[in-house]
Structure formats: C-alpha cells, structure tokens
Image (cartoon, rainbow, N blue to C red):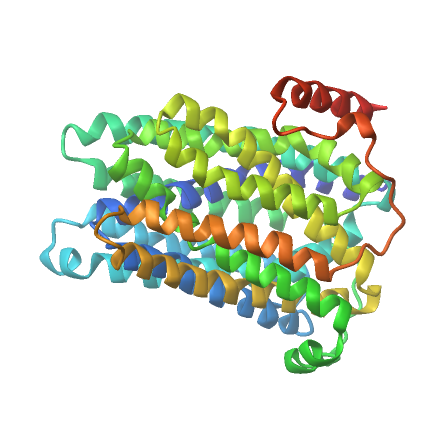
Length: 440
C-alpha cells in the first residue's frame, strides 16, 4: 500500500472520531436547546421537518458540484463552512439576555440549524466517492467498522456536556453553557476540516454527467426499486410522528436531568455498534426483508415501552431495542439498495431515496407537531402522538414489506431460533441459540 494512502486512512479514522463529537453535540443538544428556549411542540416538529427536507436536496447540488471542484476541495471547504454556521447558534445561547434575541430565539435557531444541516449534507456524495477510491476494496469492511467504533467511543465525550448543563442550570447559566457547547462543536469542525485537508485524494475523472432520469420518471417506471423507496419514505413518515418529541417526553414529562438524557441517547449508539456484526451476518444469511420486519417490530415496541416504564434505568436498558432496530434498519436499507439497483444507477437512486425519505420525515414531523398540539382532552399529548406513531409503524411494516421481494437467495431461519411470544424462557433460549448460531 502506498504510504500516502496508509497515512490518509489513519487520519480518516481520527477525523471520524473528531467529527462524531461535533455531530453528537448537535444531535443531542439542539433539541434540548430548543426546549430550553421554550419552543412549542409545533416548533420542535419544524426543527426536525425543515432540515430533513432540505438536506437531501443539498446532496443533489453536491453531486453536481463534483463536476466543477475536486472532491477534497468540496468536502474540506464545506466542513469549514459548517463550523461558521455553529456561530449564530452559539450566539443565541451567549446573548439570550438581549430582548431581540429572546423574542426571535427559536426562529433564529431554526434558520441557523437548517443552514448547518444543509451544508453538512452537501459534500456527502463527494466524500463517499473520495473514500471509495482511497480505501482498497478488500479493506473497506474492516476500515469502516473500525471507523464506526472510534466514532461511537468518541461520541461518549458529550456526557461532559450533560454534567455541565446540570451543574450550571442551578445557577441559571444553562443557556450560556449551550453556547459554550456549540462553540466547542464549531472548533471541532475546524479541526475536522484540517484533518480532511491533509488526506490524499486519488485521481478522479470529472464528468459532467446528466441525471439519467427525473424523480417523476423513476416513480413511474422503476417498479421494484420504487416500492422499496416508497416503503422507506412511508416508514420515515410514521417514525417521525414521534421521534422529534422524545426529548420533550424526557425533559418535560419525566423531568430527567441533562445527564440522564445524554446517557439514554448514547446508550442507543453503543448498542447499535455492538449489534452491527450480528446484524451484518444476519443480512448475509437470511436476507434484508427479515431485517425490515425485525426493525419494524422493535421500532414499534420502543415508544410503547417508554410509555409503560417511565424509569430512567429501564429506559437506559430499553435502548438495547433501539440500537438493534437502528442497526437492522440501516443495514437492511443499504444492502437491499445494493442488491436491487444496478451499479450505474445507485448514485441517483440513493439521492432520490434520501429526498423521499426527507419528505417522509418532513410530513411525519408536522403530523406529530399537530398531534402534540391538538389531542383529546382525556389523553396526554405525548401518549396520543406515540400511539399514532406505533400504529403507523406496525401498519407500514406488515403491509409495505409484503410488496417487496428478496433479490438474493437466502437461508431459512433455523427452527430453534423461532421466538415464542407466550413462552418467555423458550424465547430467551432461542435468542441465545441464534446468537451462537450467527457466530459460526
């Protein structure tokens, strides 16, 4: 292996850990910051909806910009720009005492966060293309597995932010601490951009290739892939009826501290990383449609368990379900896309997939915000919203997957691994057998 490639791969893993801290600060504390600014349920929904709609469109622009700029230039420059857009978010926390900031704080956060997420999505096609050429084919699996592990471990550093928020909240300085955290995220992004600038970019032949077909043509003509993409869109819709409002449930309904909320958030990521090897083996042996069933059932159970057992220790353990569901869904979507779509169409189909998934998230977040605002008087807002999402998740899982077909030959599930819902000890035995079976 060329020394430039080896060095760049090491720096890529380091950059992954650095960027994971910044991303975790954003994903974990932006919703909490909005709640601290007294954002309404509808505004929390918008905070999830608008960036999710515009980010995939930014990827479409990023794909076109690859014909004008090198991939390294595009990724590095946009990462520096990301750092810049953390500044107005941090200033909201620093300058909240100003009357103008107080009156328009939530709207300023929404605008700044939308711009930040759109800029973050723009270089995604260039980064994937760059890494695809940089990393040798036979090392990609091991490399990205190691990178994801480093990212998961590094993201645990944000627990310090939760501790700081809890400590300074008693002194009325929580909003200022949010400003500090987002300033740190900005500085980390600058360092991430620096690491990217030191990595080697293999030669790349720029081609101004036109998009092979429009989104409308894709939805009309491509039957097999269309069903898959529509399933992903609808599943994101029903998922995000509830997902944006978990922070409200934890903070306002359960009254948990920032430290607990951070721990619960991180637990899902830890279980996700631990589940990846098993889920990957499952996909290879038993197919991706079974992964969709698994993730659909677990995703439907998740909010139900949160409602039935509102104890932080139980919620921490329940994140095992969320981590397995995340791993099953993400690997299932990725592998089904690779197995179903011809190689020369994967880039544009992936872009359309992200656009329609963003549309689903946009509509789902708005529906959730409406449900949180207008709910029956005999039912709490969060319970009503969660129930709607649970019903939707079950319906899309059992109806939508029936219209898809596995493209690769897969094995039948071993009889000993079948779970019997009314015999918990037999179910436990079957699960242990299944994990042992996967290791072979």
